[in-house]
Amino acid sequence: MKSIQKPPKWKETLNQNFEKIFGSLELKKLIHESQKEYLYWDVFKYKPMPEGFTPEEAWAGLKINRMSLYQPTPIKSNDEKYFNFALVNSLNQKLNYIDTYASGFIRTFSEIKPSEAQNNKFIMTGLHEEAIATSQIEGANTTRKVAKEMLASQRPPRTRSEQMIINSYHVMQKIDAWKNLDLSRDMLLEIQSLVTEKTLEDNNDQGRFRNDTDEIVVHDPLTGEIVHTPPKENEMLEQLDQFIAFANRTEEDGSFIHPVIKASMLHFWLAYIHPFPDGNGRTARVIFYWYLLRKEYWLIQYLSVSRAIIETRKRYDNAFIYSENDDNDLTYFIFYIADSFKTAIVKFVDYFEEKIKEGEELKKVASNLKEYNPRQIALLQYLLNHHEDIVEVNIHMTKHGVSRQTAHNDLMDLVKKGLLVQMRQKRKFIFMPNVKLIKKILNK
Image 1 (cartoon, rainbow, N blue to C red):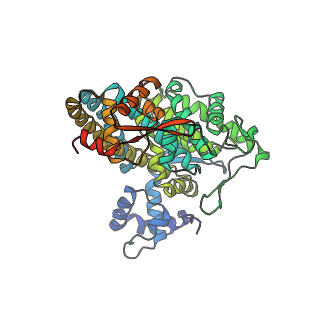
Image 2 (cartoon, helix red, strand yellow):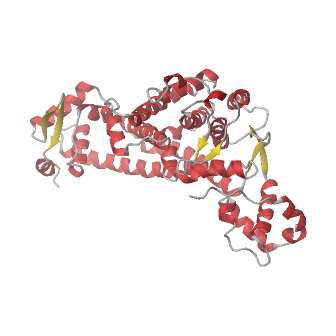
Image 3 (tube, rainbow, N blue to C red):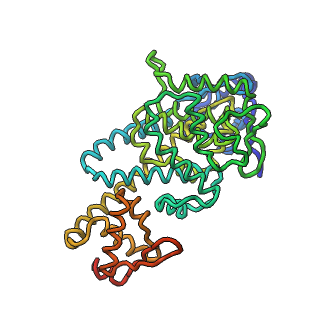
């Protein structure tokens, strides 16, 4: 697989063709269209060019347009130059969507008023999805279904991959408590220690910053090619303190940065300086969540941005490389993260509406089945379409947020009514559905 090509040097091309580039209306139209998706050179060069223009000349026009929009960041690259980003209209549109929908959902929640159980389930589902996806990004090799079953049943992890997911889930549960704390070296070490627990080849790599003898580099997950060499230890620690100060800065001096942009910058910066021997990516995504919750983006706790990322994984990896390759232009990364955030919101809205609709249907069914509680009816409806699944006390308990005894009573009551069959599997009891009777009870 070919490595990503660096853009051509454009300044000399601009100087040699200044009047031609700035005088072309057709080139302005191409630049306008290319800014909508903030195209990198490897895509831009194949766009239909205005008559008489080479891709290199058109790229020079695009670059000078972007530079006029640049805003500075405190993130410094290995060549002692700072990263910048361009606040283009298409990025503003994504940020506006995120802000509007987050505030709009406050009204939706207040109007629909999901029950406490429904609300807890929405949050739990978001935590599960994020824990699974952020671990899969880093190589956790297990299916989504198996991972969800493990989390729901609370069974111990059987593999390193499952341990990664359990670790991430425990960390995601803690973020809400951390949001009111300032970031510190100790907090970063605690996060890294938690996400890497029982998953490292060398346990000494847990809860510490890397040093030069670790010889840490970042490889392309597909080709194995080295795509990034983090700064040396002294520079890394210096930048780490700047990173922490930037994360904690209140920006009351008028230097406002949109919270999603700043959270994306923190995500990129921590991954760029790569302060740990392992767990850098997962820690960076935790900080992304931490900062947005700190800024009262309450909707983020219901979402899995990492699920949106893993579904477009190559674009995520490329966004890091594009930003480093193209004059330290961080817009590529910020643009991608904002797009993933928007996608996560869209998916949650669909899920939310589906579950609220199911809840309304459940109420109608419950009115005709007064001898069953809502948890039992929800389980029977689920088993109607998933009759190959087994039921466990732990899964029923976690899914509905009730005590183990309550979950056990629910299931044993259904056993007495003939709707479930209790069986022993090794050291635990499982329950199998009586599909024929369930269909009869639900009039299906």
